[in-house]
Image 1 (cartoon, one colour):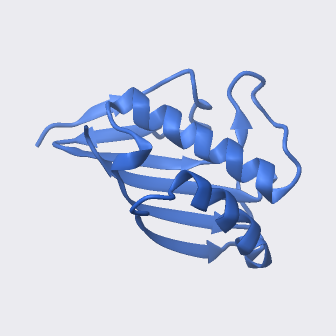
Image 2: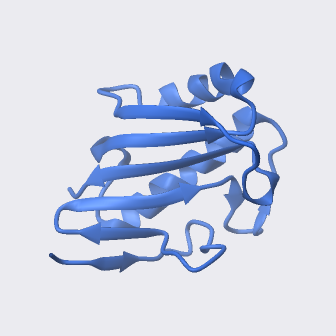
Image 3: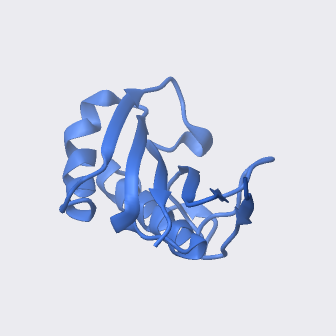
Length: 127
């Protein structure tokens, strides 16, 4: 089994002892991305729409750094601090995953790092 750590400055650095992603054989496991703007290091968007947009940009940056892409995502898990904001998150998500969307789970959680409203992790295949 091969194992390669993925790291890019185009997405926020890990906030703890974990990798942005791991490539193992032909699969990319992307750690949960929160809406930190990698340029500023801050969560700039206050609403779920803006935060979801940033999360998906971060997710895409890690996927590209791994040698994959949004089109190769096979599974996501979405964590929301308020499940009532799921429709707004889903609208943004649908714009990115509009063709052959991946399998997905979504959960309300008690709290997310940095008080984010949304976090998304993904599993993808390499290009």
